[in-house]
Length: 164
Image 1 (cartoon, one colour):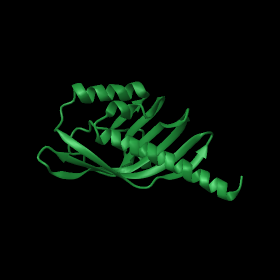
Image 2: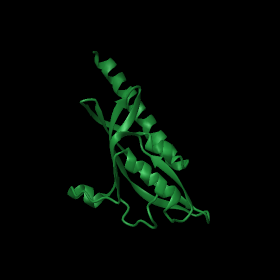
Image 3: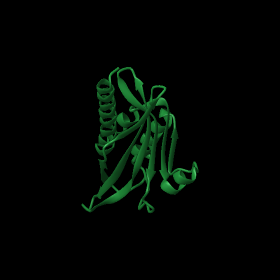
Image 4: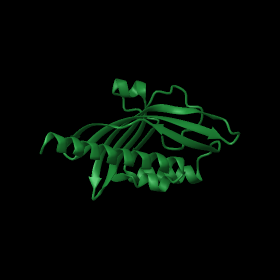
């Protein structure tokens, strides 16, 4: 394979990864959380972790889901059980870097900021950090095997019910 072909293949993979990321945030922002969960494989891991814990190698997370079943349970709790202020979210994401591809697993990283708008119309930065992803191909599609949302924000103003 020529260097040019290899570079084009890397660009195609990055664009696919970015499409997955944009679908991910659109599902959250459009409150289509049932479709959000379908972007993960059955045997997945999803964690929302404070940066201090991630940097220290500590496993404690604000949200920790092992498997798609736990993601779907979280969606049901969001719809039926949790009590929280009405709000809308809007994600802003950076360009994605594909860090490596090893054994058919794509390792990627992006930065994010989540804006939240409450029913009074006030918008504020709710959470900011980076996504650290392990992505696999399922048929023609990419899916998350592992998604870490490592946040820099030190103060969470309300119950974190919506995925980051």
